[in-house]
Amino acid sequence: MLNVNTKSVFLLVGITASGWAVADVSVQLTSLIERHALANGVDITQLGDLNVADVTQGGDANYAVLLQQGVLNQIFLQQYGSGNQAQIRQFGNNNSADILQQGESNLIQLEQWGNRSFSIEQIGNGAEISIIQY
Image 1 (cartoon, rainbow, N blue to C red):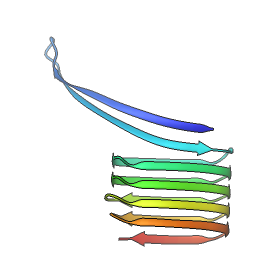
Image 2 (image 1 turned 90 degrees about the vertical axis):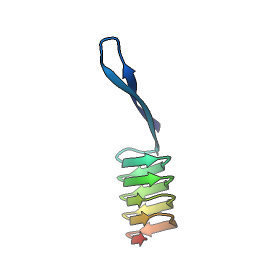
Image 3 (image 1 turned 135 degrees about the horizontal axis):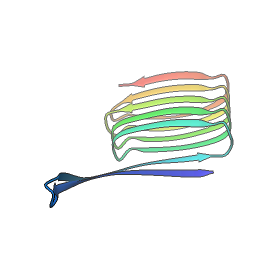
Image 4 (image 1 turned 180 degrees about the vertical axis):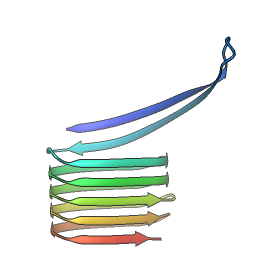
């Protein structure tokens, strides 16, 4: 299953004939989620511009919580197996995370604070890692 969600918010600026003031603002948020099984989940929050979150999940009970706050942040996450969890938070600009989780009951926690890059392949069962990059 492939889900592409696009949300647009429009606000018009001007004075109408009835005296109402309106503003014109257009914002587009896009996230790409590809799921190959049931009972997987992802929660993506993007605040800022030009952030990318690309998530592929295969297996069962995989879950990801992603937060991007800033500009030009990128997350590429692949989860295969069952019970894997990823918590990724990016603050500031130009952060990049490329993560592969494969196996069962793995956990990764990543926090990035501007102009940071991180790549990992977490393969096995019960592995845990927590990284903070300042």
